[in-house]
Image 1 (cartoon, rainbow, N blue to C red):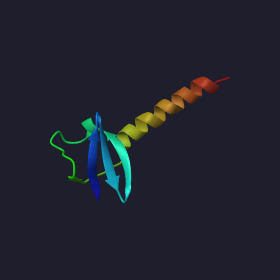
Image 2: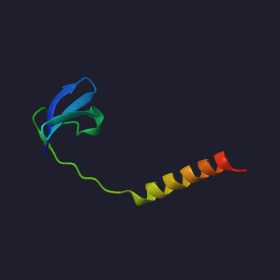
Image 3: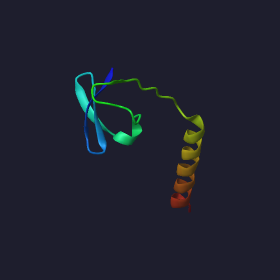
Image 4: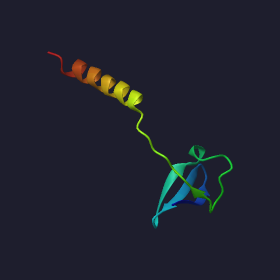
Length: 66
């Protein structure tokens, strides 16, 4: 369970399993309030992963070419 503990300027302080961490406030819904519970979903973006891998390979090839 992710709970909005408080807001500090542009940051939202989130509590998760007894620990806190900060996220940019703009990542939360605009109506988010202190004390509300958040549900997060993660997924792997395979297309962006492929693009990033190709870009890194190109940069490494340029750097290490003979």
